[in-house]
View (cartoon, rainbow, N blue to C red):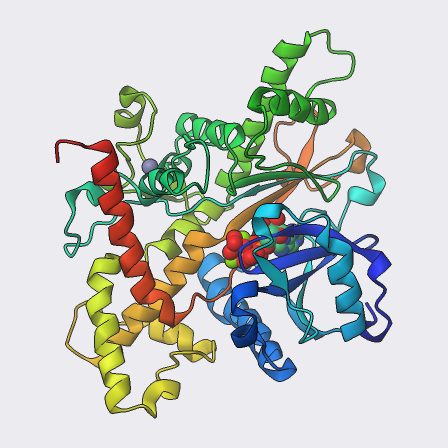
Length: 463
Ligand code: ATP
Ligand code: ZN
Ligand code: MG
Ligand code: MG
C-alpha cells in the first residue's frame, strides 16, 4: 500500500462500531479503521494530526504489548498507525456516507487528522482462498461478559444470579435501543458445554443485535436489521450457506435443508470456539457460570460440567475478563483512592501510567498487582488497570474465518474439522482491542446501578 497514492475507488465501506468506521480494500486483504466523533461534540473532538496519530499508536501499543500477551499470540493481529492524504480521506468519507446505517449517523468519520489504523482484513483468509472457488465465510461474535461476579463488594444479590448482558437487555429495550429482547446469554456461550453453546449461537442468529454478523467473501451477508422479518432472513441466510454445508444434489426440501444448514454452521462455530492445541481443561466454578435469566431448560443448566479447553479462544477471553475480580462496586473506592493520590501528587500520573504508555511495564503493573489490599497506591492502580483490561475483553469480537478446501489441497490435517463432510479450514482471531478510558470508570459505576435497579423494578415487582 503506497500511502501517497491512495485512491478512494479502491476502498469500500465495510462496517462500523461506536468508535470507528472501517473500510476495506477491494483487492488486498486489508482494512483501514478510522476514528469517529460525535457531531454534538465536534469542537472538542478535533485532534491535531499529532494527537490523533498518538491516539492510534496507543491503540496499537495496547493491543500488542498488553492484550496480545494476555489473549495469546495466535489470536491477536498487529495493526499499524498510518497517516493518509487528507484529500483521500475526504473523498472516502463522501463515498461511504450513503452506505452507513442511519442508527450510526449520530457520529461522523474523522476527516481532519488523516490518521487511521491499518489491519489485515480478518473476513478474508490470506492463505488458501485464491485456489478455492467458494469465497470464505467469516462469523463475527461479540460475546460480552461470560461470568457472574464473585466479589464480596457486590451489594445487590441479583448480580450473583443474573448476568450483566441479560439485565442490560431489559434496560436497552426500555430505552428504545432494541425492539426485541435477545435470548442469547453469554454464560451459555462460555460454558464449554456443546449443547448450551449451540443454543447460545442459535439465539445469536435469531436476534443478532450487534453481537453477531456473517461475512461471505468479505461482504456482510447477515447482521442485525431491527425491523426485518426474522424468518425470511434465516431462509435467505440458509441459501447463502447451502453450498458450504450440504452436498451437491441434496434432495432435502427448502425448510428441512435450512434447518440442517444452520445446524451445521452452528456446529462448525462451536468447534472453532473450542479448538485448542492444549489437552488440559480450565474448570469454571459452578455458581459463576449459570445465569437465572437464561431460557435454557433448567436440567440442562444443572447437569452440565463447566470447563473449557485451555487456551481456546473463549478460555483466553474469559480469563482476561476475570481480571475484573472486585466488580465495579469494589473498584470504585480504589478509583477514588487513585484520584485523591493524583490530586496530591499530579506529577505521578505519568509514572503510574494512568494514560499509558501501554508498554511492557504497564503489563507488569497488571500481572504483579498484590492480591490483598495493603492500602497502597500501587494496589489501587494495579486494580484499576486490571479492570480496564477486563473491560476491553468484555467488548472485543471473535472472528472465525472458514474456507472449504478440496480433497487435492493437501492442507495441514490438524486444521481440519468434520473430515467426512465438505472439508473446512478455519482461523480464529480477536479484534476491537482498544484501551478503555480511565475517566469512564465513574460512568461505569453509575451505569451499573441503573441497569441493576431497572432490572429489579421491571422484572421482580415484589422486590
Ligand atoms: P464497538 O462499538 O464494538 O466498540 P468499534 O467502533 O471499536 O466497535 P470495531 O469493532 O473495531 O469498531 O470495528 C467495527 C466493525 O468493523 C467490526 O465489528 C467488524 O465487523 C469490522 N472490522 C473491524 N476490524 C476488522 C478487521 N481487521 N477485519 C475485518 N473486519 C473488521
Ligand atoms: Zn445471562
Ligand atoms: Mg466492536
Ligand atoms: Mg471498540
